[in-house]
Length: 560
Image (tube, rainbow, N blue to C red; front, side, top):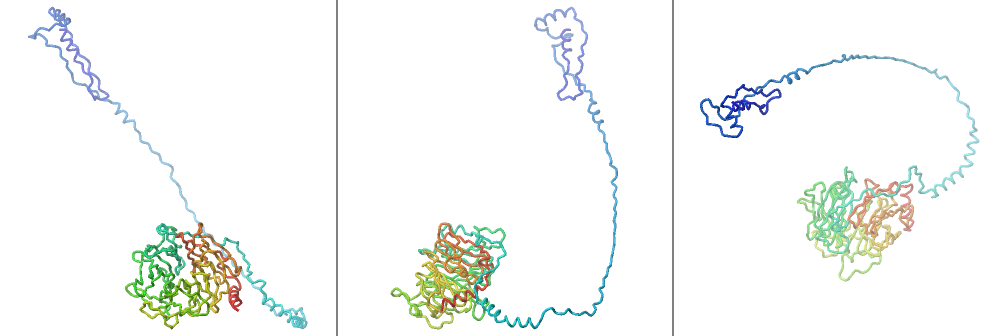
């Protein structure tokens, strides 16, 4: 019975895996047994490891393990925890509101009335009229004499009271440039302001020696009134297949600009059409210039002042007038040619080389008082007074679809080298300036060949000169030493009032232009491909007393 007892003892059950927290193992059940007579031997054999006897009736089998079922007891702990939750709430006292309004009204009227004026008696005069009249007659001649003397005196000429704080004369407002053009080493050859005065455009090309006819160049424009102006990113860029030598905005159309090319062509662009800006062009025909075009000017038509033509001058000796027609073409309407044999002989000129008959023109300026009168600068160094009304035929064999006429009427005393720029005074019909490679600025009168005065501004070339549009005695000049020089003839006729350093390395300043709308602005372009916009103080923008009379006196006194 020992084996049975051991079998019974093995019937213990461990808790099943995953049983709940309340599961408990079942107690072991042991049946009572007794060891019989035969059991002693069996027990002894079992203890000694002997094999059990074969099974038979009444004999128990071998020991076996047995697993009984699990008895589980539900846990009441979770249920007890769930009933512990309580819900509570509270409520504040109700908020009391109250509205109150009041209206006050008060009025007060008051009147006053003065007494009616009664008849009064004027106080008797306290002076002796007869004695006063006698005194005035006695001093009249002396007072009149002194007044006339003061009127003729120039002791206080140019004196003006300045109630404002003194300001820096000139400051740099913008430094503009187009990196692709500067990367090619292109120069700024011309600058121009549009009719609103808010947009400045520049032409990129080359003015030094070389063949630049196939050099790709650009026309760039910046709107200075635009918010977020980027000095290195123009508002408009036009790519041009040849170097651009000159530029001029239309007098009334803010986006139209004309340009002259190194190849001799004249083009007109509309900068408001970035995809297709070209409006008109001359093309390469028999009428086109055969040399570089150095200046273009817009001129009103004689019978239709709101219609404009483009005038171009070049070193081939031709002065041509173009009219825009359909199909994007500029058609030649009038033409002039300068021939050595037809120049007026009022001054001694150098003889041209053998076989050379054309006079190369480099600059042009029109009179502000006579729309048909203009001045030309030439490669020979002498300025020429010319007229659009000239009728004499030019003695030239140059091909042209229209008859070419000889415009020259008067020859002025020459510079020591080619004239690069001329400018007519907007305040005097007979005065104009010229600048040349001899470093001099000449002030001429239309009435005489010799200059009224000659100013040496630079040991190098002078490339541009311009009269101020608002100050009769102020002009600016651009030098080959990198300076922009401002002259005020009312202060000094020998040295500049202000000299502005445009380029730090001394590279030339090729062009400059005053802004006629925003008169405090002056733009200048240089060999570094940069356009600088200078802001002038009131010293150069406000006209002084008797300034126009002083200009008139300068013209008359020196000419006599």
